[in-house]
Image (cartoon, rainbow over all chains, first blue to last red; front, top):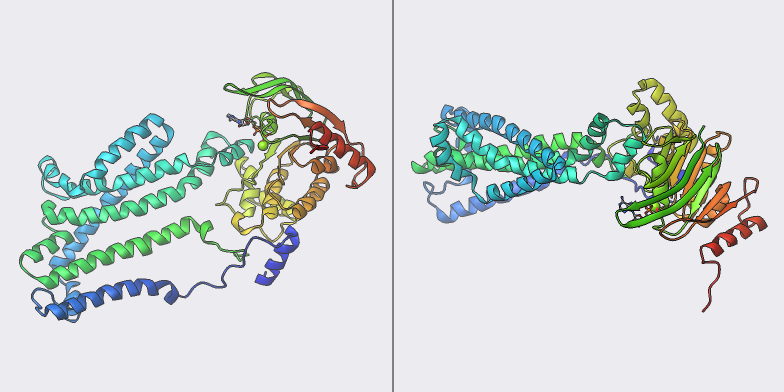
Amino acid sequence: MSTQDTQSLTEDISGTSSEASPGKRGKPSLWNKSWPYLAAVGSLLVVWEIGALIENKPFILPDVVQTVPRFFQSFSDAEFMNGVWRSMYRLAVGYPVACLLGALLGLLAGVSRTFAVYLRSLISILQSIPPITWVPFLLLLLGFGDTVIIAVITIASFFPMALSVMNGTEGVNKTHLELARVFGANRMQLLTKVFGPESLPAFITGAQVSFGNAWRSLIASEMVGGASIGLGKYLSYHGEIADMKGVMISIIVIGGIAALLDHVVLERIKRKLLHYRYVSGSGGKK
Amino acid sequence: MQKLELKGVNKHFGDLLVLTNINLTIEEGEFAAIVGPSGCGKSTILRMLAGLEEASEGQVLANGQPITKPDPRRTLIFQEHALYPWRTVEQNVGFGMELAKEPKDERKKRIDEILEKVGLDGFQKYYPHQLSGGMRQRASIARALVLNPEVLLLDEPYGALDAITRLAMQNELIRLWRGTGKTVLLITHDIDEAVYLADSIYVMSPRPGHFIQTLHADMARPRNRNGQKFVELRQKIMDNLDIGSYSI
Ligand SMILES: Nc1ncnc2c1ncn2[C@@H]1O[C@H](COP(=O)(O)OP(=O)(O)O)[C@@H](O)[C@H]1O
Ligand SMILES: [Mg+2]
């Protein structure tokens, strides 16, 4: 069905001009979608370049042009790449654990009022403590190794998930539940066909906020001595030996990985799962 | 098919007395309507018949049996359309059959049939937010009708629609209902809607709600909104609701 058919049919049927507005035709081009990102990256690079030119001391602040070759060399630099992979490994363990824990606690709080109050107070305490302050304590408790950092990630990033899920379950539309009951849903079906999809957006929002917390606390705890290898460790060590190019590429890679995971991977998953929200106008697929 | 009865029903929410001494009998295949001011307990009556709410005193019966829980044979069409925003039109309409675990191709067949009937053919893959208000309410009616229920409970189904769409939908409802033998109870605050559609009309008082009057609209369908009988009935209802005339 062409756009015009759809449009006129819409109007025929409702007998009034339809509220459904004609959506924009076609997908926005890759350029349309990505130029704001490129502009953001570009402006940071420009500030950096200008700063370096004014400072004019490459050993303190190397400029963009000097750093670019080092950036590409780093991909074959074992020390750097080991650090990157090690950090990614910790993230890959700590972040899902945090999401799972947060989701479970949030769901529990959705079921029990008392537990919700308990969880909210617990979170308000944890929220006020910078995650890296746990590092010395955890080092003594767990010993030197990945576990410490994974634990910090979990502490730092379970609560946005928990809060979001808690609010999400509170917000489940009562009419939606009653409707399912009228249509004969059993308890299990209420859970899977109404509670689940209805609170899915909350899970996804929670996961996105949690991701930011996880990544920042991961790098920070590596920097303050929670690990001997890792992207954060590489950064702090190369700062100490005054290798400013090493510091700059660490910063770039830290920002780059986060942006990639957040804006590309998580965003894709979100659009896939919440597909219905992104269908616009009356121009949905026929 | 089902006969619906309320016998001596009282209902309170905490200290708030909402319904008092409600007696109502709707015969099999009858189209009944309740009109009354906002907040008088109309939805509460409907929700009791749907099995979502219990009477504080008295009996709520279907074919003489107490109604204790929801049953897909008695479907409620909500005030707001209450379509699931994450489901397409066909997924929404097929919801009841999906819960009953009907096979997919059977589902598909019946969905397409009913969508055709309510004039939504071609909109299978649309999401609710892509539809106009009237189309959403049509989808919501299709969702109920596809289960071929014995009783249709409609809670101000057209309250949110513009006047023109509303009139069109009223005609469609009559078309869909005629000859099916379904028992219908329609809640409305639109007096004309009640007189145009229903066989019997119950007029309710403000809270605590009770029936002030029961009227029978013995008019052949389709009804003329300006016919003498229609106008008389309308006036009677307005008098009962104390809005028939005014003094300055
Ligand atoms: N679950 C409930 N808890 C407390 N009060 C309620 C509940 N449901 C309805 N009421 C009250 O009962 C009265 C009648 O409500 P309702 O049946 O929805 O009225 P109507 O549909 O006629 O507008 C209202 O005053 C409303 O606030
Ligand atoms: Mg109501």
